[in-house]
Length: 408
Image (cartoon, rainbow, N blue to C red; front, side, top):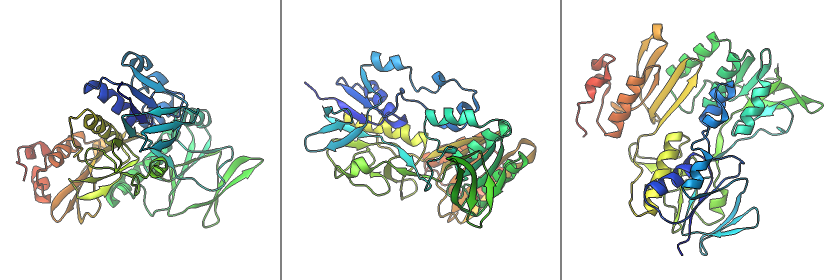
């Protein structure tokens, strides 16, 4: 009897891998193992529509729970994989069960970087439905919210909190917001927009101590000695890949689980997908670990395709998005190492795009309320069409004119 495919992690990548295995014709068993007591769900809305209270839980689900039953996917909830044995092809579960596999996919995601002494009432991280529900009850009109970290999640929470009537102070260690993912121009644009909505920023500063009284947060003490009053603090200072399970099974890891273009690890019949992986991106000639829904979905598909013997190598230009107030921020490409930036701006529509170049070649775009720019650059990068700054300037805001250019 054929042994099942075991998928470790029931998030976006793990769920997609299970769905794709069935779509690609896998007839054997599939066991999808998750630590939470929920069917697989979307995480991006946790800091936006779900946190606002505008999205019911049912609409978070990636598939209705009945789908897994009708598709004969064994969904194991509230259980954790504690060990992988590559030689015996087994996984050991937290309930004492040992499960054999023909192939395994590790899709364990990430875990938040934590502040010391954070186990007090009022200190929150936002990674799960339970976290978002708990925050909903605390982000209310008049509440004093401190957001620690000005990345995507921190700024999305800041925007949501202001919409709900809370006062918001964002503390960031870098000299500008979103420094890891965007350039100076877009950082400044988004910060100014937040400030117009009443968000206050303190940069560059770190939180030295979460101050508490009777076990409850009362303020955040900064490195310069200032204390900022806080009813709650939402901590979003980055994440770490959950690769300890893989490393303990002699799977090669380096800032994530190292995989090839078919999501294979160095251990036979063991694959990995999603935020926990580190792969070589041929579009930008870099080794990279991506934290995005797009990456999770596509690597889930790729791992499933490899298992059924129909390889579909993962060779895509990465893309990302964020909603903050009425700004829809869409990015594609990797701007690391850029040496030139060109921007279009339409103040009446709160719309702007920043294009990043290196050696005159287009690397990436950040588009705010300009979806056509994002879609055009996404296609151009994916098709490896060489685009220069002169091409962008000549297009004069209408990038559709560039789509007829031929790949190099």
